[in-house]
Picture (cartoon, rainbow, N blue to C red):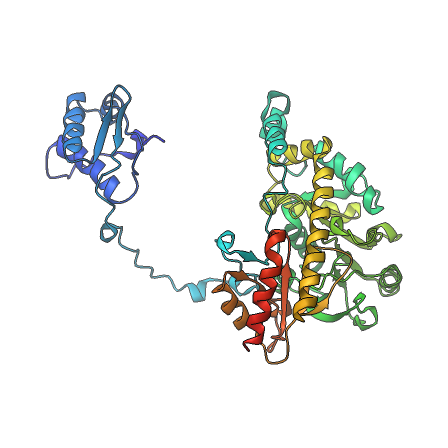
Amino acid sequence: MGISEDMFFLDAGFEGTLQQQIQSLVAEGILSGRFRPGEKLPSSRRLARHLSISRITVTLAYTELQADDYITARGRSGYYVSATAPQPRLDRARAPVADRVDWAARIGTRFTAAPQLAKPEDWQRYRYPFIYGQSDPSLFDHANWRLCALQALGLRNFDAMTSDYFDRDDPKLIEFIARHSLPRRGILAGPDEILVTLGAQNAIWLAAEVLLGGGGQAVIERPCYPGLSGILALTRGEVEAVDVDAGGLAIEAIPATADVVFVTPSHHCPTTVTMPLARRRALLARAARDDLIVVEDDYEFEMSFLTPPSPALKSLDTEGRVIHVGSFSKSLFPGLRLGYIVGSRDFIREARALRAAVLRHPPGHIQRTAATFMALGHYDALIKRTAATYKRRRRIMAAAFNEHGLQIAGGGEGGSSFWMRAPRGVDTGELARRLAADSVLIEPGAPFFAGEAAPPSEFFRLAYSSIPDDRIAEGVARIARAIAGF
């Protein structure tokens, strides 16, 4: 990697010769950590031309720096920062700015107050990572994704990569969603009823802003995905939590004052329970009776590997009351951040305008790469492979629970995690801290009860998306021993 000559500026007030100033600029760059070992310096000719000084001045400065082992010469290749150069001096770092702004008074909305699920950045170093939402590199088709990305970079796809679609999306991705993804859920929709988003969370935010930005009452599940709780906390609407049972959201408990209901019928987050068909029909009947809008987060529907997936709520909707949210981020890889939202034309028009005002559209290259990957059949092959792996891991984990007497608190027809309940008196927040010291990662359940003064402390989530088969049994055994320690 090369160091640009644009990083060098002469100071008219420098006390010393030009040669000394060049030496000082390079030395300070190395000592501050901006220039790193192995990086190539600009040639003496280029730097002299950039600074409008003599080339011999730069050459002499480089010679002195080489003598002090700041830089080294490599034949005819040029000068590089030496591998044995003096280490950066932390005490020479730029002094912090004296921030005199009263940010407590200036910040209008506290976004940091929104509940979040914290995951260690270095989760891969833990031997038993039972955490949700991280990809397993052994399952992903790296080679074909790379080829699709290269194809998306080609001249034939140049417009898709570089054009500013403004408020539109890649037509090939929209076509795949309309002709392949949605029909698998029993949904028929035209291009003007589909909007590509930066993952499901972005889709939920768009729906919340369009439907509740002016107020109203939202109903959420209890427990609930923390990201949804955080989004709704930023709207002007009221939020009412309704308990989930073995069939999902309790329809009869929805208050009469509700305007919008947010549900995860495929696999409830976090219990993974699946809403049966009869209750789905009851929810739609209630929505028709009370003039409700239903936002359906089709959470992990691809992972319904124990039984065939149930029809999506949107596929049963005859009045246009359901907003359907889907995502490729979990089925491909979390960093993709690509999802979609399906709804009536009037709703999609407003959601599209809001998206355009905030981010215009998701990157064209990402959309075209994903569309190519899906159109060539790689996506379906990946889903089949992932579902088979998850089914096997789920069986191994359930057997380990049975062996060690751990209690499952909820479970649906697939998914990638278990919702667990610890014995009375066990604080799963403290349990997670103890287990982390034993190279085991779990997710305490308290964040799923956001907004409650005293959330239950006995729940926790164990995912099997990121842990290899041969480590599951020992990981569960360590969890059981830690629980016994309470």
